[in-house]
Image (cartoon, rainbow, N blue to C red; front, top):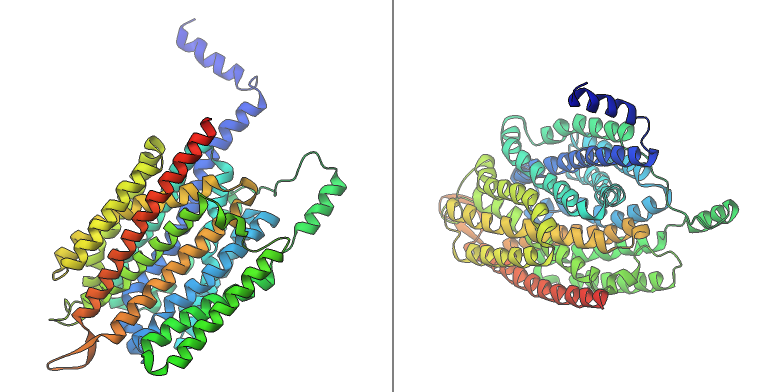
Length: 509
């Protein structure tokens, strides 16, 4: 008998003789990559929908006869709800199971998407966006699932691939969104993504396995049941005051851009309520047995810089996104005088670069660790934002600078999520990552609000065209702010490097 036949016969015989745990390991390993593909498709669909809507801001302003400061709330309302719901969804996933919570959130997201396709007023549009924001809270739950199904040595690759879906959805949104809006109107962005959301939710329901929340094996069944019943609490009071804190803060920013310092009393009232609510929220969390946000996580020497990094990344990215749309569509000589397709084309190189480097970054981080790629990424972001501040008079200059930013942000963003997911206690991954997502989404909400303040308070007229438009000074201030934020982020990365070095020495000793 030849060696080839012997090998075939041996494989057939040993298929049933191998220990069950070996077969389970191999099966789980394959299933892990399938789960990663399914979860990545979820994020891809969400970002596809969001990026498609971005070039539609001028059309929404025109259809509903609203100023830019109001139109920004189409994104801000969505992100506020997402920010508040992420720690809640993380807590719920730790209690009731990640798949159950994930599917529930995606169903709500699908309902919001369908409702958005039939809105006929700014109020109904904002309501639909609020419901969609609940669905975006599925992102940290998906991260928690990846932590469960991937070994530590492959976790950075999984996080990188999952994060790259963010860029893939954005690229597809820019490629097709502008053309869809121009041909069929902005309502079509919702109607197109609705069946995709239904399909993705169905696939997750059928194919992603359920995993029950972990319990201590040393406990008796009765003790485990009593402990589970006691722990099945969600900090509703904390959630309410967290919502008030974030909402009133962003309302204060909106008032600052709409009424300016002429109505400083109302602005101070909004910020005052936000500060008071934040103080009450912190007091509630300190006294709560099962807090919505574990303040110990915020004090963690490694997790805290990761939170700061994600927050600054969110602000920087969404400070730039709507600004580039305004710059591309503002008439010459203040802007480029383009349409929705032109606005998408200017940002397309950024999205493609982010997609490519987000995928490559996961393997770079897996090979060289987190710190070196993060520092290199921080340098690219500083160079890109600084150059954008100096050179943004043509589409090519803007696109080239956005590419530099994309290289850096792809590295720093994935490093931030990777450190956060891997450094969090496994039994509280959902809660910890939920806080990180809260801060990231909060940054995404602050970014457009800041750009709105600069644009609303620095406007100019153009001869022969009615109305006021963003001035060149407004764009300069926005890009200067992005540069300052990138420098702050760089200092934070240096701090993170030192703390991780000290931690490595302590572990070695």
